[in-house]
Length: 280
Ligand code: NAI
Image (cartoon, rainbow, N blue to C red; front, top):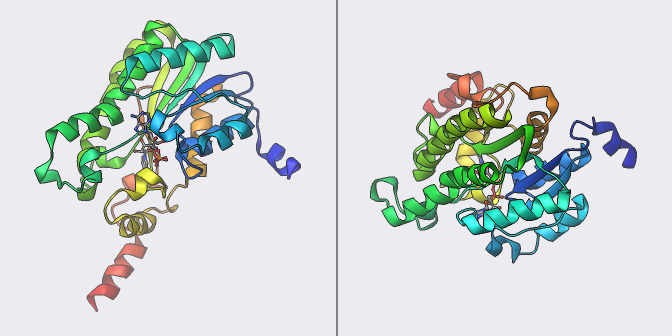
């Protein structure tokens, strides 16, 4: 067991220090990413909303990756300031990477259709799922918390570019998230050579993912529409490791598809065959 874990590690993040947002349970993309970053030699701080911490699951991860857990609601600037200050104190220095793996749609949760959005809910959705990224970056910026050539990633979905009706208001939130990535990426590159990207992941069975209506049909369709199949949460974690590493220093302000080829595929044989079958 020990041998096989060691064989997977390339020490890509040796000596690097990172903050991981959004590990709710072992299905979370953030959870898998924390495990991979730890295997690659990184030191970590884990964070999530106080309500998620009360579930207690995150403590199991904290033990595995030997990291403190610091609560922060991503819409609260005081929480974020405290998180970054305490993280720097824990690390004894600045931060090399941040994963923003946070999303929540109030309208979806309350079953409100896109044509009948409650705008109060929408504002909260945009704040938690998109503006929070600006809040995180601004906190790091004001505290000058990032090392030169640091790397920041947020997770997104292709509904920011194409219509997936049941993704509802989250599509708008992801479009804003990707916009903030480009805009802040420009400023942070100039000042500190910090790079900022979004990873656009295949549909994945997690708590947030399964909240999308018709998720089972949706994930099967994506699987058939992707020449390599859907990318798993573990594979997403691997990709994030490369983006946090020094091997991708000149990649910034990008939306990077991690989707088995879905985003550039018009149709696949598997889908045509399924349609022919349905039409018979
Ligand atoms: P998840 O449900 O495990 O993670 C979402 C996290 O957001 C949870 O840990 C939750 O506690 C946290 N969160 C919600 N409100 C918060 C707040 N106010 N303050 C701090 N944290 C808060 O689900 P998953 O799938 O791992 O989601 C991570 C990211 O990946 C999200 O941005 C999601 O939109 C994105 N993504 C997910 C896909 C999927 O199919 N699961 C596909 C593409 C992107």
